[in-house]
Structure formats: C-alpha cells, structure tokens
Amino acid sequence: MLQKLNQLSINVLLAALQEAKSLGHSCVATEHLLLGLVGDSTTMSGKLLNEAGANLSKLRVLVKVRKTVNNPMLPLPSWLQWLQAFQELPLSVNCKKTLDLALQEADGWREDKISPEHLLLALLTVPDSGAIEILKLNSIAPEEVRGTLIEALEERAGDERKEQHND
Image (tube, rainbow, N blue to C red):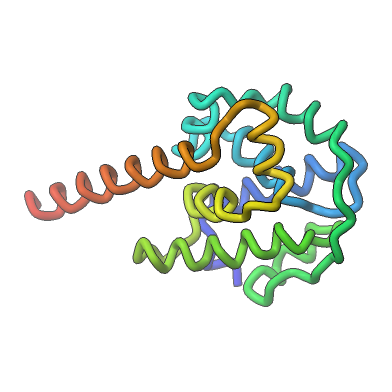
C-alpha cells in the first residue's frame, strides 16, 4: 500500500534499489537504504547524516568493498507490494526488518505516513545491519545520530503544536 509512505520515503527506497543495482549487489540491504537516505540532503535525515560526517561518495566506496552478507532474502512486506513493479532485487532480512520498524516508528510518532526520518530511526535500531557497520567504519556513532534525530523530531513536533495553538 503506497499510502503508508510519503513521497520522500518512496524516493529513498527507489534510490536504495538503484544503489544496489549500480553496485552489482544481489539484494537491497540496509547499507543501500543508508545510501538512499544520505543521498537526499533535502530531508532532515539526509542533513543530519551529512552533518554527522556521512559523505555519499565515501560511504558508497565502503559499501562497494564490503562483502554483502548473503542473508536469506525475503519478499516485500504486503504493504510494499506496489514496489515489486520497480524492483528486480529482493530485500535482505535486515532491510525488511527496517521497513517494518519504520512503520512502527511512524505509528509511535502518531504520523500517518512513513518519512525518511522514520526510516533512519528504524535503520539505527538494527544492530547487526550493514548500515550500522558502514556508519561505524566512517566514525559515525549510530546512537548519537538517533538521539539527535529524536531531539529534532521532538522540536519539530513542538513547533507544529505551537503553530496549531496560535491558529
């Protein structure tokens, strides 16, 4: 169901697919999702990752040289079946787990759609993922990025509440 993702999240997923394809990988894994997030510096997630020191070119090299773990591949979650039309590669177990967690993050923030911020929050909670490994290799602390993102989301939510109250 396409309506669970906002357009920015759709763009991130399609960018992750393109990254996996261009690197010649056999599946879309969390490290490709990370590249999709870093690649869009117009989102809060992309800006935050860039400020933390994530550089798309540098991360891409790390992903390219990293041996992608051949996790069992899983089909798309039912709410993402629409993506099948674009996807020629399966999702890794951790990537599917990340997408499921992103849906939970959106629900937890009482938001109707999954944003790139929900994708990043979820990505940062899968400890054995390739994305976490890539971040650590780049001297970026995932728990610090998550904490900073939560603070920014709380601040944004507070600002939105103030605006609604003033209207």
